[in-house]
Image (cartoon, rainbow, N blue to C red; front, top):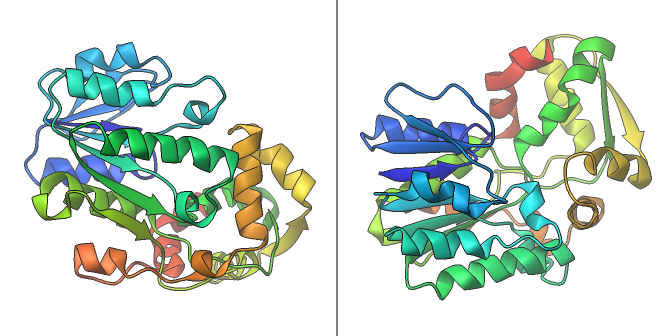
Length: 279
């Protein structure tokens, strides 16, 4: 059995589906009740209270670990989940980390995530780490404003990064969970091209066949919106990257193609697949 945390999110949902389609027994873990694919067991648990995972981990051979926002907060102990997994007999953990661990190692939230990576390496378990950059699905934050006002509001409108399709992250994670060849690997995941928020708005407009206006937020406005969902230090670390990406953050990584044998999906492809949420 494979346990998938964050199983109803943008990465966890396609990962759960991919594993189920591969014939694996899957336990989907999320904070709230949710629909899961046929044949998948669902467990409601809060990762900030690792003991709640105990029933999900019983009998599991592998774990996909996604650190939710509250696990980046001061006082959180995400490494307890790794200890619990090992004590439960789990043999393999695939961690969803962040590109910023390598490109911005001194960012407060990155230091915390690196500590989880280090704990996993030292755990004695088989492991792999996936480090995506910006997610294409962050554009879902614009869905309501596009539907109701025809507006995309974002900071740093003409600064781009190679955003990655969450399905590429999920399929890479699935490969790491199922294939011993990827054990001990650290995979940096990006899309195939650098794209700015303004260009993303243009892609959405083209797919809709109707105008979408771009409105540039200040850094302060963007942080206020982000801190409704994530700790302030994580918001600041993210804004530092998207305001002035360094050369490593602009690099198109070969790792999606190296693992999956195909090129990473473009933002255009992600929009085409998800355009209904913007209508």
